[in-house]
Image (tube, rainbow, N blue to C red; front, side, top):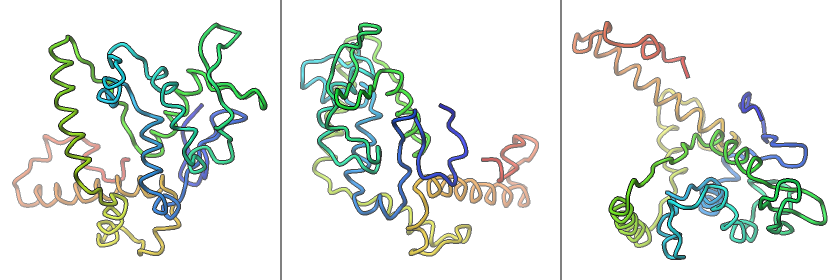
Length: 237
């Protein structure tokens, strides 16, 4: 699956049967918490879910991304997945042994559709491309490091649960609309796809950073000789 040319797309095709939806900003805002929670659950690595795995008696160092996905799929298929998988009915998938290679896969007996490790990888790559998510590939080298990371993660999770979550998407919209580099008004932003919006966020940040560097060069506080060519061109994305 080649991930490119997403700027004007409304979906990203994984194979002939599965596509990942690229929703509009409006659609995401209508169920922001559920949508981002679903995206996070699908793309999560064991490092991301170390506390939840530890509560189940599972060492996050001894489980793969795909095994975590299979473990989480009951929660995934019970959610409203139409902003991620479109019309794909996820409720019919069950864990079964793939007769071709002996590995576990999610199979829908009625439709014959299969989600195996390779397809899961492509689904994750698609969602990460749409949202500019970086895969968390950190590891714990020993038991002491694992215990330390778990303790930190538990404290962080506890603080997050006590704190009311504000809409991050709304905050970004407000910030961009009030930035001279962003041409859209509040109502116009809603019709952008979430990919177009995310790309705009990155580009506006890059343009502001470029402008600040130029001011520094003209003021003599920054030397252009020590800067890369990419950093001197705000149109490089």
